[in-house]
Image (cartoon, rainbow, N blue to C red; front, top):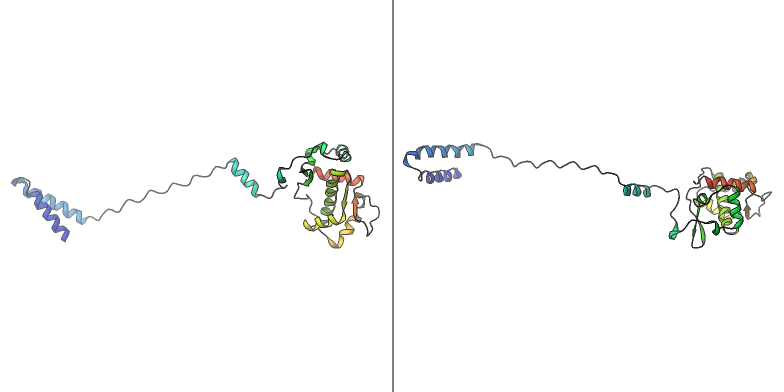
Length: 216
């Protein structure tokens, strides 16, 4: 009500400024306008415009690379910027093994690499699922590892046992039996309790070559 009184006072002041013949009409018009404004509800503030829909992210080459690094790799990164193995790096007997079994340097470098004058395993997955297959695959790859240096396709039984444990394919109850069942792969003849090393036979070297090629 106080606001209305103030508005009427303002209207009277305005009407006083117009000619006498228009005072009544002017007063009525201004009063109606003031009353109409009071009767109308105030306009609500305008609603904010809806937020724009997020733009779909376009996959980029960098995204693809990041996604790839989050997946379990088939091989581990080369340590200290290791390099590929060349023919000059390996023993002559091992070069002959590669030639005889059609194993390329590229295939060999999928399995091992050179690091500060030594050879390191590059693979993380043996490529087999059975425990006995895993044990024999480890024996062959360890033999290959040594042959890179001295040309001897030999592996320590204890080293094979330890890697089997590490890779969760150690069958303690059948560890010796697995070697006996795969005697043709090795040249130890009849397995004896004192055997500390296993050496690949010619058949074992062929099996090794076939295994290396599966890492392509």
